[in-house]
Amino acid sequence: MNIEYMTIDDFEQIKDNLIEEFDDFWSQSMLKNDIEKDNSKYVVAKENDEIVGFGGIWILPDDVQISNIVVKKNKRKKGIGSLLLDRLIEIAKDTKKDSISLEVNEKNTDAINLYEKNEFEILGQRKNYYNGKDNAIIMTKYFK
Image 1: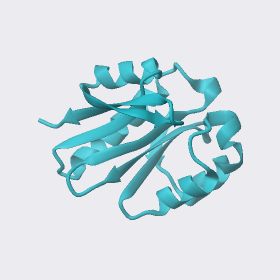
Image 2 (image 1 turned 90 degrees about the vertical axis):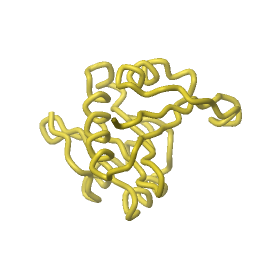
Image 3 (image 1 turned 120 degrees about the vertical axis):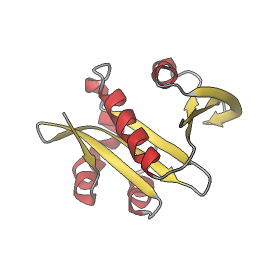
C-alpha cells in the first residue's frame, strides 16, 4: 500500500466513480476545486496502482482541519483509513500548528473509534450539520 500526494491525474482516475465506489459526500467539481486550493493537501492510498482511498486537510491560520477521509466501499475495514489518517497527521505536524481538527457524523462510529484511538478528543457538536438532520461531532488532536 502506497500513500502519496494526490494529483489531478489521480482525481481524473476516480472522478466518475466517486458516488458508486466511495461515498456521496461531495460533487466532482467540489472535490477538484478543493484539491487545487493552495491551502489544501490531499493524499491517496494506492494498492497495485488502484486508488483505494484518499483524504485531505485544509491548512488554516490557527490549525489544520481534516476535510475528508474516504475509502472505497469494497476496501473498508482493512486499515486503509488508518494509513491515510497517519499520513495526514504527519503533514499537519509539519505545518508547525498546534492541533488538527475534524467534524464527523455522530452515526459514523467506526470513524469516531479510529479518531479516538489516535488521541482525538471530542470537543463538542454541531446540531443538524449533515443533511439538516445528523449531528457532527467536533474532534481535535493536540500536538505535544
